[in-house]
Image 1 (tube, rainbow, N blue to C red):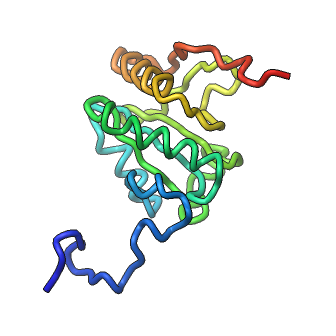
Image 2: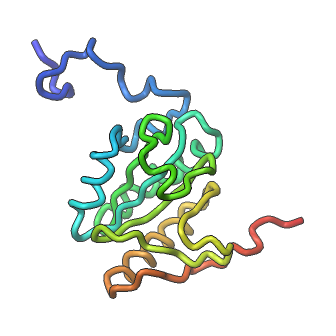
Amino acid sequence: RRRVSEPEGRSSSSRSPSWCSGPNFMSFLLPHLRTGWAVDQAILNEEDRVVVVRFGHDYCPVCMQMDEALSKIAEKVKNFAVVYLVDISEVPDFNTMYELYDPCTVMMFFRNKHIMIDLGTGNNNKINWALTNTQELIDLVETVYRGARKGRGLVVSPKDYSTKYRY
């Protein structure tokens, strides 16, 4: 007898469960995209919501912090955003195209268009650190959504992160 949670045509012994992919226990709360085609389809097929994609590794400490924050906000932003995780070793297709050289990178897309965010850091293409404050993350995703709906390809972050590191 097949369990309800198993996908059609697969038995539980044919694949390992998502929580076995690494020690990051927050990553299993969010959907993983396991192929380049799946990433493309997720970005292409979402018409009304921002697609938030975290590129990185489930076992990376920075990604663990980011995944925790993303999993906390996923339910709160579900009306205007959807969150996916992509392992850059499993799906290396976008590493060169999006310059994914950092351990953890978050990018946002709306209607098949990459939305750039002016965070004050000089890199408007992506967030490459762990943004752990959930309210800041919600505000950022909402700002991207509001700006992208108006046709803007670049939105200004509600908070300036140019001084996030204090020397």
